[in-house]
Length: 530
RNA sequence: GCCCCGUUCGUCUAGCGGCCCAGGACGCCGGGUUCUCGAUCCGGAAACAGGGGUUCGAAUCCCUUACGGGGUACCA
Image (cartoon, rainbow, N blue to C red; front, side, top):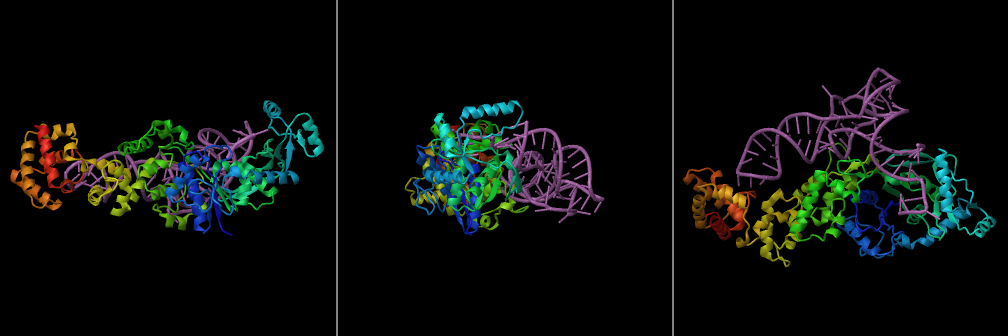
């Protein structure tokens, strides 16, 4: 039997990081077995603008490379898969037929209770300190009974006629053998008076119709499983294999990670610093924001965030894989191939795992370090273009310069957006901004500094070749002849050529800029300091 | 309230009765290297939630308390 798994997002307009992990597990399970991964859109209660709210989710999956075999088209329209439609809002007839069948077989009944009446019974039981068990007093099992209730002006919902004795046993691939007493289960409503059907029914019907073999979903669905098993069994379906994955918890906390609690997470310094890094990149790239739109999706709980600041999909996936799953006591680097080879539900942890922004960044840095020059350029180029470092047409000379800068930046670039930190190599010499405080410290307050710099400038000017080696050689000779230490000039040199106190290796910097630009900048700095 | 699920360093985790006075990773702290930053190299601190059992022996099995999470909807 081919393995078929599914992920059923509702069109909310964003893809939550915890959801991605669940989706990843589903995807891995299907793909490693040569099976299919299905995307089913849970839009039963949204209605309008589904397409618009769905696109960010599909884009997220696309970016991550979690391709789906069946489900909506990438543009958000329905696709003609063998088990479509893949929008639950379009599958109502299927659910109604199932409800009718359940009624027919006596596994469900028409119930004419009014919500208030039920509520009263419930409160009464609660007051008496008893567990509420519906005595089915408004249940109609025959048409006569139904007619009588209807004569009173009542209308019926369809309820499951749950067993009141015995227990429901099943195996969860992550949690092992489980049993729930049937008596704990209420007679859940599966169809409203207006004929529309509820989640549990829809879910079971869809999983069956779509031939889902493994239901891998969040832990909050575990208590729902018995009633779904009841529905499935009553309908004569084979049961899928179940696996309930723990939730992803807040950074530094144990509560479930939610995109609604951003304020709170911002108090966590690691979370806040990731946010800040993102905001800085976005600001420099001119991506930002209309505030409102932004805070909703531009934050580390939502995957879009990572795409927008230049994370690598593989890094995000690698981190997420290890958030609750491990192979052994030491293997941490998993590319897709390795994930597909080794993943198994049995090794998914039972306990929730808390989201650690720092570790995510560490994974991203590792993946970035593995990239070739070309790949690194590909990751950074979009940002450099947005910031105007490189024109949209990306001329050959611009690309060559950008590549050299990136290469000199080396592992200082952890994510694509970090390329924006090196604007000093792209701004015109006349526009270069000097850090006032550093100029003060290294040029103004140091009495000898300007004279030395002026002298060294002449040495540089005399160089025929202007390379890392030649400039280094030049400085060495200069330092020797002046009888000073490296340190006595290098900081002044750095701030005058880059405007800053920190940067790449000094000679990388000089060579990167080239003779003319170095001289022009040094002249400006000297002028500024004098 | 009731019913479920969970609990190893700050965090992610290894561990499925002796290999564990608990291993790895991220982070943290100290030091080396270095023209700054980054990187890198050495070294360090850091955990079996508490209490009872079972056993020759428990992080591992059982019970219990605490804590966290979820369910208990004509939400998904």
